[in-house]
Amino acid sequence: MSKDNLNALDGFISHLDSIFSVTSYDAREIIATFHLEMGSGLAGTKSSHKMIPSFVGPPRGKEKGRYLVLDLGGTNIRVLAVELDGKGNTTLSAGSRFVIPQEMMCGTGDELFDYITDCIQVFYGQHCVGRQRTYDLAFTFSFPVEQRSLVSGKLIGWTKKFTAYGVVGKDVVVLLSEALQRKEMGFINVVALANDTVGTLVAKCYSDPSCDMGVILGTGTNACYREKAARILKSPGLAPLGEMIINIEWGDFSQLKMNIYDQDLNRASHNVDKQQLEKMVSGMYLGEIARRVIVEMMTQGLLFREASPSAFSKEYMLHTEHLSLVARGYDFFADFGLRDVSEVDRSTIRELCRIISTRSAKIAGAAIAAVVAWMYVNIESYHTIAIDGALFEKYPGYQDHIEGILRELFGERAKRIKLALVRDGSGIGSAIIGAIAVSDRPSGSGHDSGRHRS
Ligand code: ADP
Ligand code: MG
Image (cartoon, rainbow, N blue to C red; front, side, top):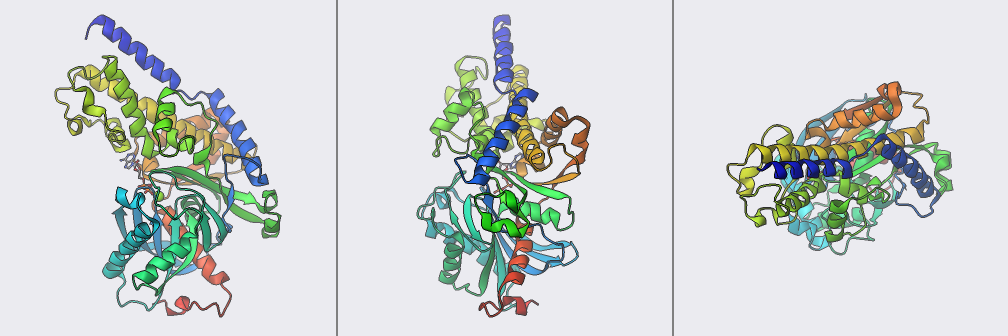
């Protein structure tokens, strides 16, 4: 590369550093606007935070039983068998993961729920046959739902890659139960519906009462926290309950400064102007942001000059896993037909992955800071934040960046905030919610599965 080109490259990287930066000032602005939106969402006035009551308070650690769990994420379906010993300990006695085919995400609701039920059937065949007569199943659902009770809720709208037709506005527990009936699996009773963030919080809280927030950083991103029920102004009837977990649905926060790459990605997406925070933070999008920057740099002759311009032309062909590989010291070039990549190009890609993933973690950190400060203005007490999702778990250095921004914002008090990875928390927690639902169930409700635990 000529000296002029190297200068142009340096200039471009500095430009990226600046348009993807999140300063302490930006983080404080995020906190202030988060608080306004949280207040409006709780009051039931216009807000990008839906602030959905979950109908669950913190668990007591005494919930007991054996549950099947269906965890429908943005990429994976996980089916789990979870045992709760009533002393704060959970055992995952079996678990299977199924990748959701793209055509199931975008077909009809019946096809999607039939596919989900097929996954349960496979799991059942491997782990459950002949053990019990009936099963209680807790359903973790990672999409915005207007929850009406512990075991019912209508889908408000799809997010991530999902568009399955005929589901929005319907009760997803009814759809799942109908699919189980269609597949002659009516001996499985759906006893609870939980958002994945709520499951994650509850899973950690079962053994650690200092946990007051659950966060998902996987295909999508979202969070929930423990709220005083009296502050949920839009539902005054909940006040006597004392405390309730609120699903923020923060992925839809719309007051971040989008740069040109974010704007282009947003315009080309199937949900234009929705899920703006999610589009800048979560695993579904980081690879696509990087791809868009790479295409621009190739067009300007600043990267992969020997490669065909079409090497990165397909949307969403570059995944967050690819960026994560680079952060680990490997590369993804062979997947894109690139050979003999120069050291300059390698280092440019490393910088690009650093810039995009750091911004993601800093926005996530500012959002976490906003919720903690909402609960306790001066961070007077110790907080455990339960986090589930492969982006947080597997992206090298991601947690360090979140902790870095918390230190920038709160100084020494940041030591009172502990980030805890709760692997499979989203599923395990909904088993606990299942136990709460079963114990709350009025006698004579027609369900008898609790009496047949083996
Ligand atoms: P789900 O969102 O379906 O619940 P996960 O929490 O496992 O599932 O998140 C999957 C997403 O996490 C993937 O779509 C990808 O964006 C991201 N991801 C997966 N593996 C890695 C990795 N090694 N490093 C960083 N991000 C990853
Ligand atoms: Mg998940």
